[in-house]
Amino acid sequence: MIYISEEQSAALASHELAYGAAKKALMAAMEPGATIFPVLKAHGSDPQNVFGVKSSSDKNLAGLKVGSYFPTNDAAGLPRHGSIIMLYDQSCGRISHIVEAGLLNCYRTA
Image 1 (cartoon, rainbow, N blue to C red):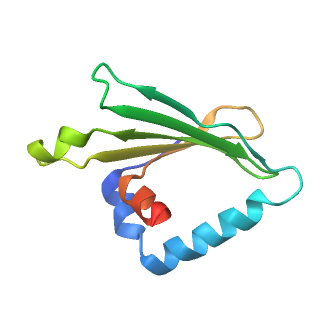
Image 2: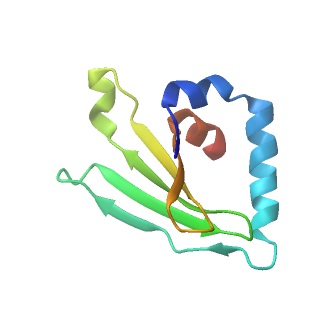
């Protein structure tokens, strides 16, 4: 399994890379065999804290993103949003990659 930390993924990110990746992802979502599953949304123990799960697959990849929103984190000097991406090995169903992706998610959203 490959693990990429928030610091590593943030260091790789750029506006150009994010734009190109978002464009490729949107195009891949339209390909035959691609599936985007319904979004799951839930609250944490504090109702203002939110978790969301988004998942999809295509002929090459299957994975999910778990995002979080904790609006009071800024008072502690922490980001309000967090994100983890998990990709699955298509040959056996085990997790092949875990990417902490808070900044990447910000690029995707923008």
